[in-house]
Length: 302
Image (cartoon, rainbow, N blue to C red; front, top):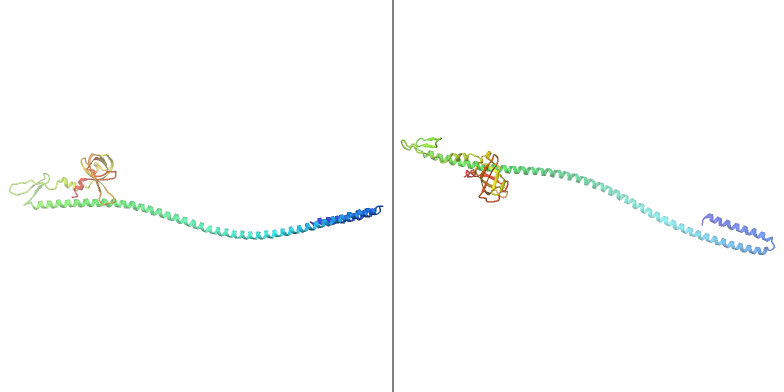
């Protein structure tokens, strides 16, 4: 109960008592003042009882209000304690968030460094890859040149052996001659004075055509097309190919140093930069890119 209520109750009580006394005084002047006095006394007692009831209710309400106030203060204290705990938790959370942000910044820096390192490694890898590709192309070119040089050395060795054989044969023929020797280069005969007035014909053991063939480089080309038993090669009359020539067909493999023999090609048609012919003595499947070389250069190798 509030203070204003209490003051109002007290004033009401005082006014009630004053009114009662005024009424009693008024009725005392009347003839039935005794009866009126009794009624007003009863009314006063009733008013006092009501006043005591109101006071008791006011005290009870005051106690209840005090209890509610204490309960509210207790709840406020609990809420304040909880608020302090929440503030502590929030402070810890803020500190954790700050630590996580610092850790995230460090990890982002590490990720950025890793990305830069990855880019450098990728650039280095691409450079190494390009360098490896160039080395591979260079190696293939060197291998091809080495193969050509080996073939050329074999050809020159064969030609040298043939020339040495012809020189030896000529030396033996010259040694077997007695007296002076007269050779006619236009007729191909040699006059040997084996006796007076005797002329004997002489035919050289090495024909002029063979000497020319021995000094000629081999003709080498590639298969550019195959249709059944007809094959086309990449060399023609500009390279010295003529109808009727035979070419040996073979394929170089990386597994073996010796080439794989495929067959023989007899030329039937010749153009400036290509030729075609019939495949003879086929010993395997002939494909585009296989090598063709004239048989005459192989025969001169001995």
